[in-house]
Length: 471
Image (cartoon, rainbow, N blue to C red):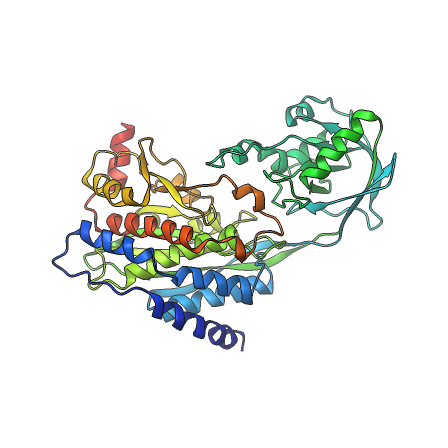
């Protein structure tokens, strides 16, 4: 019944999306360069991916891994790939610990009563049913927490108020992520009974940014949450004037016997079908918004690019595989996919992941060793009209879900998008469909379709090129 329902919901939208796909001629006489240009230009007016993310966020909304909503999302994705004519379409289940948000309340109780906006960190344990109330210790920098002596936070709540800078490529997030990932355990080592941190975001909205934490083995697990930026600033000002007490109530739950789903489909290669170019995005999302930019937009980009390539007759030389990962936010799906597809890894010649919102692509990073090759020279010329330049440094990462494949020797590409405002809404209740600009999404899709098609056609051995580069 659920599968029938999802197929019905998507049918009208899929028909409209397929009808809107611009038709173009890509004859056998066309060179790869000409076909790549035609695909690029077709993507600029195509709305297949945009319509999919509209349906995904409207009819399903949030897609926390392990929830019934994520199951429906996987069925929707499977139906979409089947209806669009992809080969080898299937869902793969894998075990996870499903984490569910409960109540989350925080307030200053002294020196005056003030409510705070918080979001429980993914994976956090709960407070006692009645919550905890105690004095806070504020650290302006995470390094100050790490420098605190064992026992110095006994019975207190640690609060880190360090800001994450706004940068175009989002690299400040990677630099700051230990505040969220490791902060609770580091605070617990020093005796804290709970942990709060300024959200890893660049906005000034009174919305908290959620995200996963990782408890260290052998360290007591304490409840943890992110503060909205204005509330973190407020606590810093208050603490500068004297002692501050907070009451915190968090009631998340976990199910250690849950599962989630990764969905995939292929366009089988016409000449070298055993050589696979894999492109992916993650289908799951956090639960505060509807997962539009993170990562509904990435799903839209790879589906839009793959759908255009699937129209080509004959198919491209190599096999294209689209993978929509089912539990990226809690760090399960990448390792699970690499484990389940260990036998495939030697056949995956190149991989890339779209997971940085819906803005324009501004630069392209190639695999190591590919710099002075016909593949890259042609790609650079094809992407130039889109306002994209080639970065001469090799791609060293492309996304969390394909990182295990890269660690196993799969070369990667990276198409970097403008992330100047990405962390204004990342992991917040503001991550909704209205934040997607269809023109910018189309430009990103155009970049991906050109890059992927040329990789499918290329004679370049990306693995050998990377090995020769290292040597």
